[in-house]
Length: 227
Image: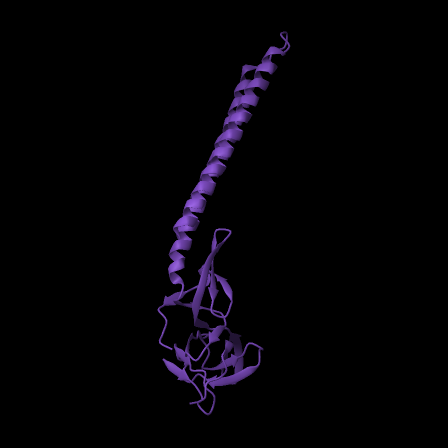
């Protein structure tokens, strides 16, 4: 590792109640539609031309079609209810992440505590530089990553050893082969999780700098380091 420096429950009940009410409404609508269908079928039989009666297979086809639609609606309701339950469970589990540090590609709120960075290098890179920018996008520091280290800790200090201002800082790494710039990429860094919420059955994680990312972008978790 290299230091770089100049020196639940109520929500779940509501979800189940809402899903149950939705299912009950759907069942009531299906029951009403089925009664209407039977009445229409009876009227059709009563008023058919006796010299040209409707083929019995047509009745069977109509019944089978309605039954298929009925089953599809019930299946959709069941899937929605299952998705709601799974979403609630996922949110409850992800809620345990609050206060932990997530490894993700995002800016980080710096408040005197060192920030851990995980660079990733192209195969043919033989050198790299770490670029640090403030919330205004100004370049505040540049470091040579000698030996292409896998772990880097940015201490947030200037050339005199004084801490930089509290702010949101973003990181970029320039990869070189000789003197040729191969690519500039955003590295993974550890960032404090301050909120977890559900958005259309997706779990969204809010980081210390205010950035919101899908939980799938979190590639690692750890307990906070001492500041």
